[in-house]
Image 1 (cartoon, rainbow, N blue to C red):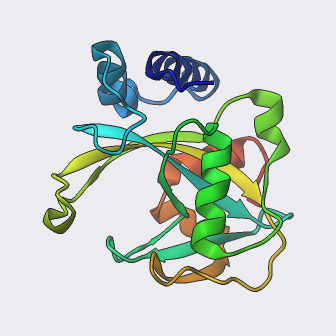
Image 2: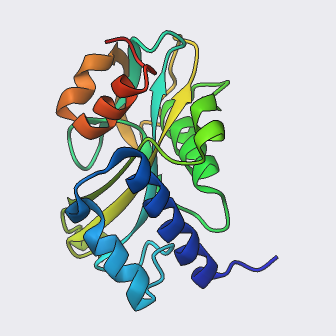
Image 3: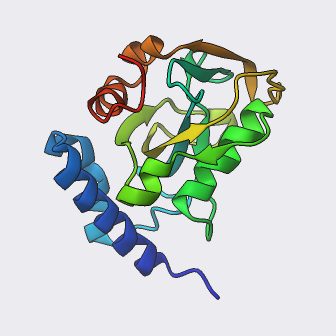
Length: 192
């Protein structure tokens, strides 16, 4: 079946609406993405500016006390694994792919909460610096974020993409993705 950019935009609009109903985020957090949807931008394509869809994964241990973070090569900071959406995958499959590619961890699974709710834990638009070497201007990543579960164990990061990967205390998300951590705590998906 051929990928339909219009259907993808409709799907993202629905995801935004359902997420807003569940978590009531500030409207400004999704304003640009909503503008791009209404304008008919190809938000699935990494070559669409001023922004495009990405996905990421908060890889948690079973108890919700540890999170697997990567040290991002180009941004030079600790973050959750993630990257560009690749059509025609589902958003959840995209998050799983990115988590596996960047950490090498086997046995990753989407948290059952997503199956029951049908929504991501967080949606965040953030500015990415220009990368002249790749012909990319400063632009926005509209990041659709999921909780992924894994057993704490050895990681095998792709050193072409990341400097390192490490299991850290879930509280470190306070400085990385505070809204996501708040939502996880509110739902009891992580240790307080």
